[in-house]
Length: 162
Ligand SMILES: Nc1ncnc2c1ncn2[C@@H]1O[C@H](COP(=O)(O)OP(=O)(O)OP(=O)(O)O)[C@@H](O)[C@H]1O
Ligand SMILES: [Mg+2]
Figure (cartoon, rainbow, N blue to C red):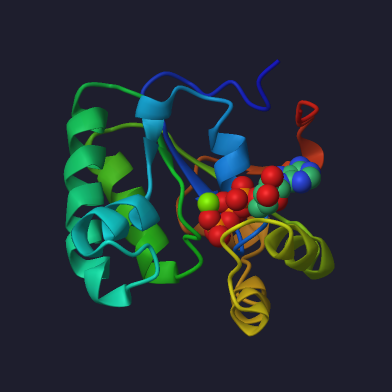
């Protein structure tokens, strides 16, 4: 069972702190649906964490989002998406291509995100997780930003993980 059955052609923006489970959620769907800034930063600089690669990574992501939405293909944006202007850009792209913009909010408590972050191979510094977690928007704010539907992971039935 999928955690969420998205409408055709939709742009699904995952929103959450590092370690909150965005990529784990995305892994339930076909890999080709997923766009991810970390991946393109790594391809541009050999390091997911090298912020000097963010500009080119964002350009690659924008190109892929446009190509997919133009074709009516479902697209999952697997980045933190905690900055308001970043989300505004994504909502604008969905609107341009006349596709539904959905948000999935990873309303995971900070201590769980920290524990999950510590347990994996790529550990994000604790203070970064804390600072980003504080930027978590409310579902109401996401609706005012233009998302047609907002799903909280705390309300979704996530399949058991192996
Ligand atoms: N629902 C869950 N229950 C238990 N562990 C989980 C759950 N979701 C994710 N995890 C684990 O938490 C860790 C972090 O998850 P994941 O990499 O998906 O986070 P992320 O939000 O993509 O982080 P980042 O923003 O840094 O890429 C992983 O080791 C994953 O296996
Ligand atoms: Mg991830």
